[in-house]
Every structure is written in C-alpha cells, then in structure tokens.
Image (cartoon, rainbow, N blue to C red):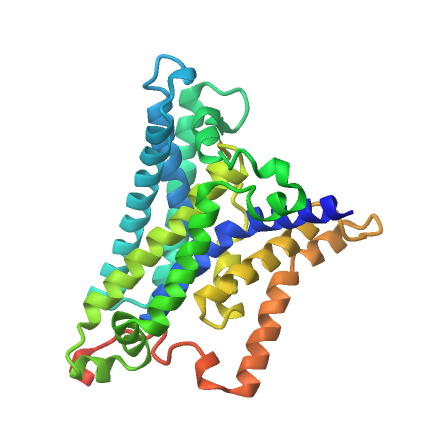
Length: 334
C-alpha cells in the first residue's frame, strides 16, 4: 500500500513539474504588471526548440552510443532557453514598447507558438523517416532522465523524494528562489512596485520598461523549461504534435491558485499533477461513462475558481493580483 501511494505521489510530482515551471515564470511576469496569456505557446516553443537542438545533436553523431551526456543536456537546454527568450522579447516589444493590448498579444502568442511547434515538429518527423506521427530522441532523453543511483534502494522515501531528474529539482529551487526574491530583495520590491503602481515607481526613479522586459523574458525562459521537461523527461524524449495538452493553461490557473506566490506553487503543482493523474489514469470511478472522465479533468480549474472567489470575498490586498496587471503604462498620463 505504501509503495503504491509513493508511486502515485512520484507520478503526481512528475506531472506537476511542467506546471511549476510555467506558473513560476508567469508569476514573475505578472508581478511586473504584464499579463502574459502566451505562456502555453512559450512552453510549446521551449519544448520544440529543445527538440530541434537534440535532433541536430543526435543526428550529428555516427551512432547514438557515442552521445556525450553534457552536450546532450546542454544543447537542448540552451536551445529551449533561447527559443523561450525570443518569445518573451516578442511579447515585450509589442506590449511594453508598442503598448499593444496584453490580452490579445498573449493569445496571439499562444496560437503562434503552437503553430511554430507543430511546423518544426512535423518537419522533423518527416525528416527522420518515422513511420508514426512522432519523433523519438531516446539517447538525449536518457541523459535528461538520469536519477540518483541509490534512490531505488531507499524504498518509499527514495521514490517520493529522490527518484526525479535534475530538472525537477531545478523547478523546485527556482520556485523557492523566486519567492525569496519577491519578498526579501530590493529588486523584488521594485518589481512589485512596478506591477502595483508604475506611475509611482517611475517617479521614484525605477525603470518601468527595464523591469517589465527583464521579468517577462526571465519568466518566459523559466516557463519554456517546463515544455522541455515534459518532452525530454515525462514523455521520454518523444515529440508528437499537440501532445502537450492544456498544461500551459493549467500553469496560468496555478498562478491564481497560489495567489501569486511562486514558492507556494511547489505543493500546489503536486496537487494539480495529482488531479491530472486522476483524470487520465481512470483512478476515479466513471461508471463506464466517458463524459464523467472529462468532468474530472475540470477539477483543477474548479479549484482555481473556488480560490479566486474566496480571495475576492475576503478582499485582502496581499492575496490580490498586482493592481496594474494587464494595463499598459503611458508615462504621459502620469
């Protein structure tokens, strides 16, 4: 029983890591006042960018056995960060420099990101000569999925805490560091000021554009790692177009569920991952009715709505989104 529970928890963690990356990146972005609904597209681009890097590296080798573990990890990782950074720069240029509507820009970026991912993904699948509509990068994935060798000998403890790849621990570390940064650092205070009242922050000498650009681009790069983790670790290096599902939107919902506290996202992402596992693994009874299974998929969103209602009723300022979230800043109107 204990081993079964430990296995379920570990699967929930693995399912929640992409959401944790996405929510941490989006929280940093929203703290600057930018509402980036393009996170699903950015995570998709982060995934396909890493896949392109891994594909080019694997096919440059005489045989998969000659793969270098450092290069197999570093090349997709850098490609993923660069692809996500480019998406963040596009968003910032449109919303910060050109002051375009943030909601429209974010939705357009999601559509664009998915289209880019499917285009390059389809091209790589055809190039590889695969007989199925997917691309397998097993040699590179094996390097990403390496875990501590002694984890399996520690029973349930090892399964729950030590059975993950390095990106899972990076996600937790980044989330905790982001929470400390926002609450304890001077730059974090400035970033929160930009999101709450950019006019006052500007009058105090804080560069609004610089903080918005940095927060959004760094947040995009963090979110992009969620897409890379999903493909290289959770999916064992297998890329299929449109296989990412609604994880990008779940990451945005997780931001609301954690009331804009990235460190709270560590446990919340595990909860979301567990609920996702319940819906896709037929753990909850459905009575043979397919519609019931689809209803279970709504559980994370229902929980988010409940949290949103409760925080709105209690109306505590620290539990509310940044006051200037989604609003373009016009210095002339200060």
